[in-house]
Length: 126
Image 1 (cartoon, rainbow, N blue to C red):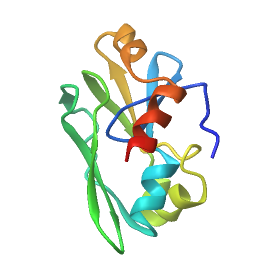
Image 2: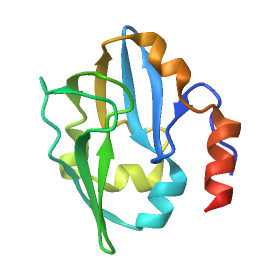
Image 3: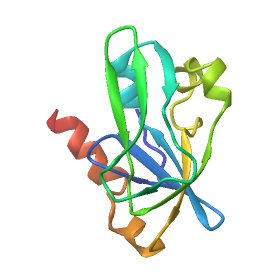
């Protein structure tokens, strides 16, 4: 699988892509594959102020539930409500389906996250 290079990644399997002055956040295809068929995406609180690494939401599959983490300090400004009715959008295209958007307290912090090659080495290490 070729990872998109137009975004950054976290070791906890989130991707982060600039969308104007905010950042769209989703989970990687690798994470979606490990989880299997998603049945729920939510518990994202718009307006929440989060620190990097804090739980921002949850994804649940037929196999497991997993927290989604804030990739940087900031405020949750949007939730992709299309995922409420159709969480499988992530299974269909994990790198196309954002879960939430965050307004970073310091946008430069995003640059400190992993690039595609760095994230691939995390996935390869298992």
